[in-house]
Every structure is written in C-alpha cells, then in structure tokens.
Length: 571
Image 1 (cartoon, helix red, strand yellow):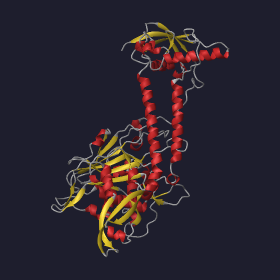
Image 2 (image 1 turned 120 degrees about the vertical axis):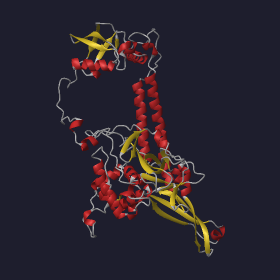
Image 3 (image 1 turned 135 degrees about the vertical axis):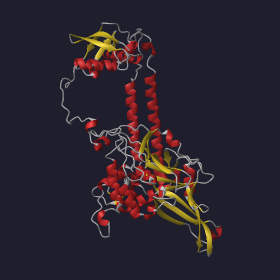
Image 4 (image 1 turned 90 degrees about the vertical axis):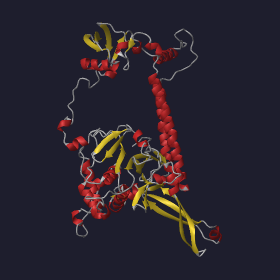
C-alpha cells in the first residue's frame, strides 16, 4: 500500500515522516523511536485529539498529506546510551555444526538405517525424549574395569555407548550412523545379531525387545542422585519403574471355605501392557484386561490344581510410563510373530487413577481434580481475553480516526478519576449529562485480569499443598495420576520380523541458548523415519491407532504432567 507524508512535532522540532498506510500504530511508534530516541512505551502521539493506540490501523485514521501530528514523551534514563553487546554477535554461517544444533528451531538428527535397524533407530529416538535420562548419561562414569576380556574397552557397556551416541546426535543436524552402539548391542544381546533367513545381512527385530533390553541395561548401570548427600539409586527404578500390589485368590469357593487366604504381593514393573482382543477398542480396555489374569496352580487346601485370578493395582506410578501394545503373537502355522491389526485408540492425556490401589487413589484424586479445576479457570480467562481482542468498540471504529481514539472503557476510566477528584473536593459526582452519580464504580480490564491472575496463583499454591507428602518427596513419581503423551514407536507391516518401524516424539518448548528462558510448545511432533526427520501436526498421532498394516502404535511413552511449586509457579 502507498505511503503518506506527515509532519510530527516533538519538543520544538519537526520531523517529516512517510507513513506506511499498511502498518499499525506500533510500527509508527517504532519509526518515531528511530528519529527521536523516545521508546515506544514512553510516546504519546495525538491524532485528531485522540491518542494513537498500538493496534490502530494507520489506513483507517483518515490521515491527509502533510498533516501535523503532535508527539509527547522523553527518552528513558538509558535512552541515549548505546551499549556494546556482552557477547560477540555470531551469524549462523559462522557457527559450528554443534552450535547450530543447539539453536532454537534446529532440526534434531536422524539415524541411518544400517540394514534392518529401524527397530533400534525408533527406540533410541523415543528414549532420547526423556531429558532426565540425557542429564544422567552426561554424568555417567562407568568406573574402572573389573575384569573380563573386553571390559576395559567399554565396548560392551551399552550405557557408555548410549551416552556417547546421544552426545554426538546433539552436535549435528545431519543423520548419524549408530554403528558403535549397534555393535555393542549385538555383543551384549546376541539375538540382535541374527542373520536374515531370506538372504545376506541381519534380520529385522522387535522394537519392544530392543526397548526392554536397553532399559534393563540402564537399570543395572545408570545411577541417579536427588541431592549430593542422597544415596544413589537406579535411574530406571526412580523415573521409569512402577510398583504393582497384586492379590492372588483361588476361584473355587471350596478352597476359600476351607480357609485358603488370598496372597498379597508387591512387584516392580517397567511397562504397562495393553492386551488386545475382539473387545478391545481403547487403551483403557487393554490395560484393564492386562491387570487381571488367570493361572493354574496347586491348591494346598484342595490337594489339586485349581484356577486362580491375579488382580494387580498400581501402588507407585513412575514419572515416565511406558505402555506396550501387545500386538504380536506366535503363530504356529507360519512360525512367525503375527500382528493383531485391530484399531485401538489412545489418549494424549492418560488418567491412571482407576488402575491404582486404594491408598494411591486417595492421594492422587484431590490433586487431579484441582488440576482440572485450574485448567477450566485458565481456559475461561483465555477465552475472555480473546473475546475482548476480537470485539473492539464499534462506535470508535465507525468514525475516521476512531480506532486511534479512546474507547468507551477508557472514557469511563477518565470519568471515574474525575469523580474521585470531585469527591475529594466535597463536590457531588456527576456524569457527562450532569446527573449525580450514586456511587457506582467500574473495574478496568487490567484490574479484572490482575484479580483473576491472583486467584489462579492462589489456586496453584493450594494445588501444591494437596500433594501427598510421600509423593512430594519422591520426585521420580507421578503425583497427580495424569500423564501427557511424549513419544510413540510405530510398526508398519504384518509381523514383528518384517515391516518397518518409525517413531514420533513431541517437540519440546524452545529454550534460548543464551538466557535459558523457556518458551511455549507449539503442539507439533517430530517424525523420525530413520535418517528422515519431518515436523508433523498433532492430528497425525490420531492416525496411529492401527486397523491395518499401516503404521500403528506399538510403544507409548507418557510423562507425568508438570505441577506448580510451593510458590505457585511452574518450573
């Protein structure tokens, strides 16, 4: 759009300025900042008796050529000082590959397929989505060799090799060949060195088996400390392992009448299974089915074998929860792991409260309900702000220059201040029509927002106070019963020993490498298809429920939702 010349008067000086009619009031203020050194927030620009607003459209102000505009305001205390940047400015083309990989918006590295190794690539990319794991691997020290033929080289220490691999991946945006880690995996677990029956090269493997074996090695090797004085604990046990409380009871009434008691036991778990049959439509169905199983064992009371039912409940939920869709089963006719194609949907947010023991449920429910209450309040506030933004006062917009004039709300604020002044002087308050005001007051949008924000902060402090003390002391546990989906390993094909594996990992919030300030997530995901890395929308994840040979979820990685601190802020 064309520009228009105007004259801006400021502190006895005249500035001839070309106004871009497609710009806004904020753009014009920045233009004046470059000429007068008065910061935009300190400027007061008057056009036709009204003050220019930042969101005013310059094309709707009814400006005329060479029109005179008044500007007031002085530079801030540091307005005239040019400060040399503390850090030397470095352009992208001058950065190393490692520096570019750390910049906001950088594409993460893919992994080269070394011959039927997509099962491993998808597993490694999803595990990499656990930031605490990356931090622990950076600090990992395997210690001195304790014997063995190859222990000194570290080639059979998967934890060392994983630490090195993730470090190398973090220093590039190019695809990387995980050859050293792959060789170590085959050395420690020879099943992954199986040769292909159809020809040269290695056979395809099950991603879930690779996941389980890598996690088992991390459980043995990788230790974590909450504080310097705290004892070391297994990283996997702290962040990725939960606990079941199980009850084993005989199904036959004769045994129970004979005095046979139910057996209560506790056992650790590293993943929840989702069993799939003809009645399974949703993740919840499959988990409930897996938590109850029947088995045959000898009954001392009956003196013979009997059927028992084992019912398990979660008594500790880890911060990172792995869910395995049991899609593969051994098919005797083909001597292969066949795939169950059934469509099974899964949520982006998982509520596990109904799978928990009574004691854990009592601790989680108040926190979960308070989280949902706060979310509703936050949604109401955000919708209210958006409505105000979408519906500016029509009266002002209908007149030339109106979008730069005071709104009805601003006029009410001005009237309120004048009445307060009259009250101090002992004069009766009046409206513009001369009527006496009966004491009615108005709250500004800013005051309303401030009250709502204060109420939200108080609610978040209340939320923190509701967290069970035992759970609060266990920072590797879920404290609300709610999880958010962070990663998905998928399989395409008809059997575990064929087809193709990929993974999806949710993008994290951008972090400024200089200030460390964390932004907001955009909701998109990275799709890791070996060396190809693509950004996709959240809608793509809904299509991974299965229903055919196309990509279907095999492993889900959930993370406990973040909760506020004692001060009501989010870490």
